[in-house]
Image: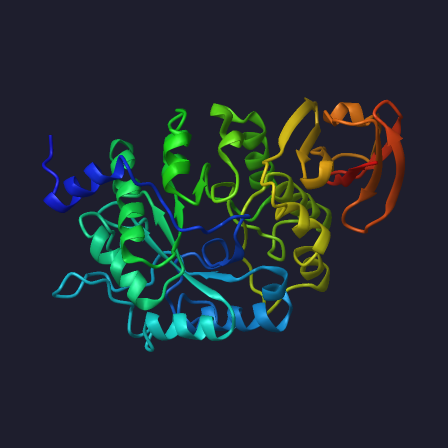
Length: 404
């Protein structure tokens, strides 16, 4: 058995009585994250507008403010992997690559704060990050304090170059040291993602005690198959993962790819609807400098965001699946429900369905049903009244049923 450093043993001893306590993420966090769109592009010579640098994050932050995203709730600007030098300095500190972050992280955080935004950063609980940069293993207290000193507002802690046996100690240890800094730092864990990949059920109760949000599944790709794969996996609700979500703690199905290359307009609607139903963090990963108006309008749709940000914080569930059709429902504050019918099929024309509100497990007698994206009134229905739906291929019927 490996001997742990004294500071780590002390932290583990204290962890039994203290979990993450930062008062953050009372609703799912919203913002922008670089990974899906920009990955580990450090070629600033040939791609100065696309590489991981302070200029990229400032540029996206400027669009968040100018185009209304910040005011809609998208306030986190999150750096992912590949931001530091390949080695720590002589004192063991992480060092932002001076060629790509010449102003330093404190100045970048100040820039975000001056615009009413928050800066997130990335590390790994292993010896290295997934991209081969220095990890936080055996440096957790030092790194947590460094991030706090820089004015960082969020930390994503990955799990590469480690083992799943270390997670139950490593992730709570970083939570402890983040608490110790006295700065409220949103904590995103990749803890369960590495466990579910081995077909095991993660310890969601312990995860929820120590993390504000947690990645559950594989990285999202810029494709319809990736989005539907994530939806299908969450629909299975393995380990009853949905019941561990709520104010302060959220399952994270990964980034929003609306405005990128891989989804049609109706498929973008599906992702927005389902991330709202699942009470998921809304972290866009796109180029806000070059985005189509219809994609921007989806991202800023106030009714979609209101469902995602519902203060009751109940994660929705898949109720029924038959062939290419799925029924989902999410309870909302005030006795309302968000309901969705997803058509996974990609052949032919619209699917015609006759459904009742009873199919969605609603509690009540009569409801006012309104489509979400266009705010179109559908009608007033009892639980047993029939609604006729026409759902296009790879599209969704997404509505709010308000109890009367």
